[in-house]
Image (cartoon, rainbow, N blue to C red; front, side):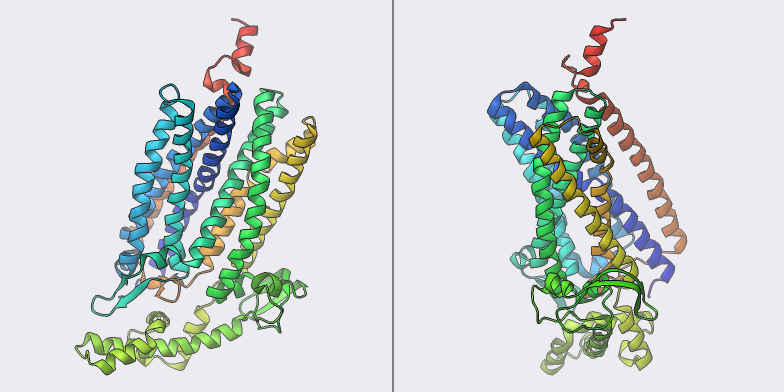
Length: 522
């Protein structure tokens, strides 16, 4: 039975909201873990107490963020069984492997070394504690890696084989799964984006202290560390974003056409649409401003490689849907007991397009008898919503460029020791939301740009949901919304509390509020 459109939409909204909220914590965890390692490394090399204090203070904020990330991440995995039962059953043999590895890393490696980080300062030598911090940073990165391996398999499935006997994907090649080119590019791009997030966070909070003329020595050193690390990271994001674009153009041409609002295949090299208001109904762009050749050079690094437009992709997908109808026909024969060599050969010939045939399930149960009109409707359905993907991508890029210039300015002012430039400190402080806006926009491009697939070319999203009623999904969605709102309030309260206290929260007697209390005794 095909789930109702309302159940599919609500299930997508629920997973989208919970995943977006969880992803609010992930980049900061990735970035802060390595900044802590840098600060503690300087402490070990120089022996200066202030770098130990920096590591401990920013570590407090890291711990709050890490805890929230773990709590919100747990609910995501439960949703696979609750809202996406057929998805879990169909591809669980493949998808479950990286999720299991991530669970082991997150709860064994990360959590163990997080405890050592907080409670090992007076129990371990400097070098031993530094090694524990390094393991914490590496564990955070490894945790992100295996999750991105799973997600990238949904973008570009490799290392699996469809089993017609069980109607499931069998996992056959672990190295191929891990070395998926899409996974490697996404991992390093996401990791670098996390470094940028951590750096902007430290930069902005340090600017706040400098504007308040509080704990200036502490703030200047934190500002300097974040500036250098952030500039290197944002340059890496730009470079790796280019590599990510090449992967999208190669493996997900529909997503590339959508994020560039490319309706017709241009003669290469294609123009880049700097600004446009896409109209999917008429397949045109209003108020279009384009840069000649730019898209072809960026997306293909070539003057002769074309970028397929929506029209040609729809035509190509019509043929893939017809091939999928044949694959479905032979699958029905195999499931009915006809396992002859000829039937298996016929199925294997069209097997790679079975997912396209399954798109017809939303129009009729007997896929092999679909009408030309239904085939055309299914082919049109293979293109994601162009306007939202187009603008989300540009929001991400705009935020990235702003952060690049902010880090260039931060490095310049650090080099010149011009800490009194209050206008720039305000710029640094107000830049705080930028990395999260960029990360959420990038996540939206990645996931919404894959639609209508939960696994690209393999399983349509509408087929992956559980057999639930609309009321049941509304109930769970409301529950998650209340839970996550509560967690957000707790997170903001704790972060703001300790940011306001600053390094005085360490109770060393060396910082603003403690010194103020000494100077003005009750």
